[in-house]
Length: 243
Length: 309
Ligand SMILES: Cc1cc2nc3c(=O)[nH]c(=O)nc-3n(C[C@H](O)[C@H](O)[C@H](O)COP(=O)(O)OP(=O)(O)OC[C@H]3O[C@@H](n4cnc5c(N)ncnc54)[C@H](O)[C@@H]3O)c2cc1C
Ligand SMILES: Cc1cc2nc3c(=O)[nH]c(=O)nc-3n(C[C@H](O)[C@H](O)[C@H](O)COP(=O)(O)O)c2cc1C
Ligand code: FES
Image 1 (cartoon, chains in turn yellow, purple):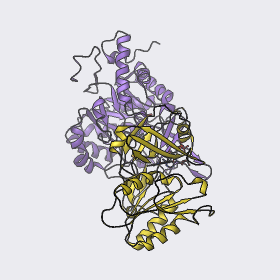
Image 2 (cartoon, chains in turn yellow, cyan):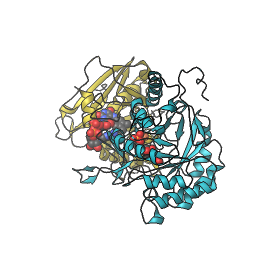
Image 3 (cartoon, rainbow over the protein chains, first blue to last red):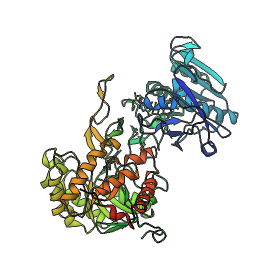
Image 4 (cartoon, each protein chain N blue to C red):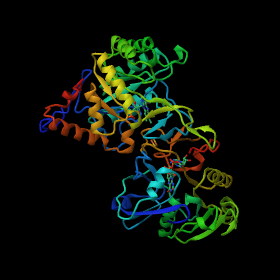
C-alpha cells in the first residue's frame, strides 16, 4: 500500500526494464479475470535494475484484483507500449505536474531527468497529505485541497508560480482531465512546451481496434499508439473527458 | 500448403470459398487493424481480415468507444477507417508481406458503394477474398440494416458478385429474428461463404453521469458472453446452406473453436480474445491438432459438421 487508495506493485522483468521509457505503459491482465476480462493499462512508474514498479489506485474490479496480488505471484503483462515523454533538450528547467495518481508515470520521468542532472521541479497536487505517495526527492511544490500539506488549492496555481519563476521551462503533466486542460492553457499562454499523458479505456493497446481514440485538433488520436503522451497543442481540450 | 504441413501429424489446412488456408483460425475484422499492429502475429493465422474499409475515410464515433461488460465488451468504434485509397496505397503493401491470406472487409451506406469498393479491390494485388459486412445502416432502406433484410442482403451480394471474381464471404448480423432467410438469400445471390456472427446490439449506462456508457449511445457486444448465441446461429445456418460457414463470436480457446466446427463451421475467427491474450491463435491451433490426434483424425477439416444429432 502506498496511500489510502494507492498500491505499489513491484516485479522483476529484465526485458521491460531494459526497454521502458518514462510515459510508456503496460497492459496488465487482472489476475481474477472472471470479474475483469480486458487488460488494464498501467503506467510504468519506476525502473531500477530489473525491478519495475507500478503505482495504481483501485478504481474498480480490475485494479482491485491487482491489489489482491500476493508476493511471489507471476503477473501477465504486455509492453512497454505507447510513445513516451520526450525529455526536451537544452538548458531549460523541467517541470512535472502531477494530480493524484497522475504521479505514477512522472516518478520514472523524474528519475531519468535527475540521472541527466537537469534542473527539475515537481508540482504535485492531492486532495490531502495522506494521499501523497513517495517519489524521488526533488525540488517540489505540493498543493492539497485542504492545505494539509503545502499550499492550499490547485496544483495548477502552483504551476503558474513555477513557470513564472522559470521562463522557458518544459512542462510534463499527468492527472485528471481538468488539471491537464488548465496546464495546457497555462503553457500555451506562455508559449511553453507541454507534454500531457492522457487516459482512455483500452482493448488492444497496440493501435489495432481504434477503441481508445480521443479527439485531436485534427483527427482522432489513439491513446495507446499515438500517445499516451501527447504534445498538449495536438489535443482538443473542448471534448468530454474520454474516460 | 504451409511449410510445416509435411511434418505435422495432423493437417490443419482448410479449403474455403476457393482459397486454401494453412489453418482454420482467422483474425476477425476490426480486432486486428490492418494486420501489422500485433508484431509478428499475423503469420500464425490462416488468414487475416482487415478492418472494414469504406469508400471515404471515416473518423469513427465520439469517445468513449469501449465498455467492458460481464464476460464481454461493447464497442462503438463506428467503422473508423482510412478509406479505400489509403487502404490500397498505404496498408496493402505491408499486408502482402505477412505470410498469411489477406481478406479485405468492406461496407457502404448504399449497394453501389459496396460494388465500387469491390471493383477497386478486384484489381488490387495481394487480396485472397472479400468479406462483405452487411450489418451497418442502410440509408436506401430507411435506416434498417442490409443484413436484417434478405432482399437487401441479396442485392448487395449480387452487386458485388457482378464486379469481382474474388471469393465472396458475406458477414451476417445476429440481430435478426431468423438468420436462415438471410443466409439463403445471400447464398442464392452468389456468396461463396458466410461469416457469422457480427456483434449483438447492446448498451450500458453510467448512472452517476446519467449518460450512456458509450459515446455512440449503443454498441456491439462481443466476447465470451455471446458465444452461445453465435453457436446457435452457426448451427442453424450451416444446416440451411451448402456454402461453407465461418463461425465466430466469443471464441477464446481451442475447445470453443471445436464446438463451432462440430456445429458446422469450416473455419473460425478470433476477435475479442486476441485483445485479452494475443497468443490465443497459437493455443487454438495447438488445441485443434491435439483434438485431432486424440480422436484419430488426419485433418482438422474433418471436425466440421461431425456433431452427433
Ligand atoms: C496509458 C494509461 C496509463 C494508466 N496508468 C495508470 C497508473 O499508473 N495508475 C493508475 O492507478 N491508473 C492508471 N491508468 C488508469 C487505469 O487504467 C484505470 O483506472 C483502470 O483501467 C480501471 O480499471 P478497473 O477495472 O479497476 O475499473 P473499471 O471498473 O473498469 O472502471 C472504474 C472507473 O474507472 C474508469 N476507467 C476505466 N478504464 C479506465 C482507463 N483506461 N483510464 C482511466 N479511467 C478508466 C471508468 O470509467 C470507471 O469510472 C492508466 C490509464 C491509461 C490509459
Ligand atoms: C473493437 C471491435 C471492432 C470491430 N470492428 C468490426 C468491423 O470493422 N467490421 C466487422 O465486420 N466486424 C467488426 N467487429 C466484429 C468482430 O469482427 C466480430 O464479429 C465480433 O467481435 C464477434 O467476435 P468475438 O466475440 O470473437 O470478438 C468488431 C469487433 C470489435 C470488438
Ligand atoms: S486500445 Fe486498441 S487502438 Fe488503442
